[in-house]
Length: 87
Image (cartoon, rainbow, N blue to C red; front, side):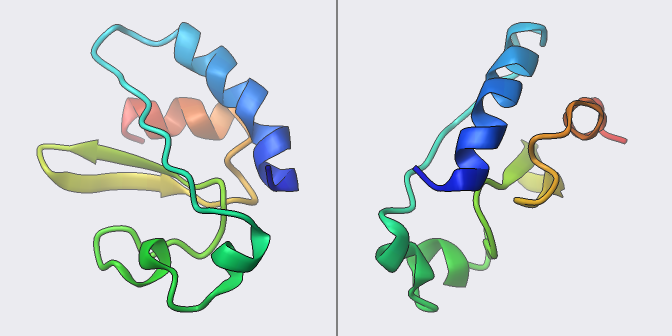
């Protein structure tokens, strides 16, 4: 697991436990470090995701992206709260 994921995962799961039942977390594996570093990685080039780092939290609602947290902020509780609240 990548270092930023190790730092963010416990915070994300802590916040998830406190969220309403209509919020779901979908986790997608990006592969090992060499796989993720490939500029043509499917999660990097897919127009729906355009990931530049992991972990990335994306808020989807009504088939549209309503917000996202990039790797450098995905461990911050107040940012996760704002993302889920739609702020």
